[in-house]
Image (tube, rainbow, N blue to C red; front, side):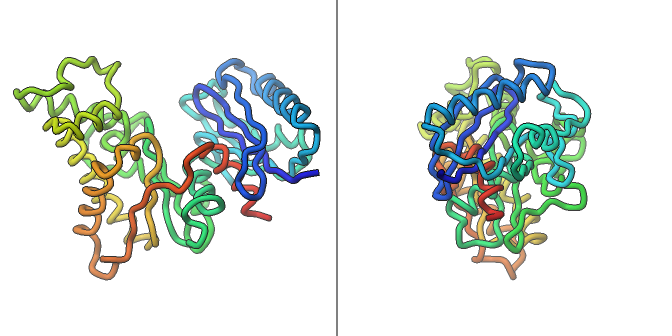
Length: 316
């Protein structure tokens, strides 16, 4: 039998899983719609039924040694998902306990950004690092912080929410219920909001001006910036400056060797990375200057599932 960790990434739309070996190879994988069932038990029945099907298709030679899960509002300590706004299951969902009733192996859950950070350490570009952070730049902004080789969880399992540091008093409304959080400015959604703010300020031509908000994507903005569109370029400069300033403050608390930028927005490349590096360095305390790398993730494929599975392999 070949040992594998079952990695599960629970997203608002789909749940993706994969059986990952110790080298980071995904041997079998599959997905189900997350929102298909209001009943968490029916959802888990469908999920593990498909896992069983995939294991049999592979020949029945894979032995699951543990289950790692990345999910929104997940607590490592309690094994629960707590009031996730984009999931149907409200209140406190005892997911680890429910999975252990189906599979008698270790089960670890954390939020998706923490899972991404562990994936970077076990399978990615942070294999030789004990102090680093991963910033996930998608619809929102997530963050996973590793200190002295361990994920930073805090006393309740919810530490390290860089995306919810307030950067503008009474600023943009955030999904968390507050105003001015970093992710309302630095995320794919934040970029779109910034574009329309700048379009209102400028009267000049921009290829973004006639695109409806519902159709605009951060990728479009990045491509327009690459073609020299002034509004798009200013949007990325504004976004990068805000991220670099906040990261300089986080560095003063955690002193990482590297900061990895991951997710759809990070695919903008140097348009984002270069001004982030410049702003970070400019705002660092002197004792940190020249020490902090800002790097792309070393994980390209199956990143969410690899990160979840890494929670198990890191314990081996």
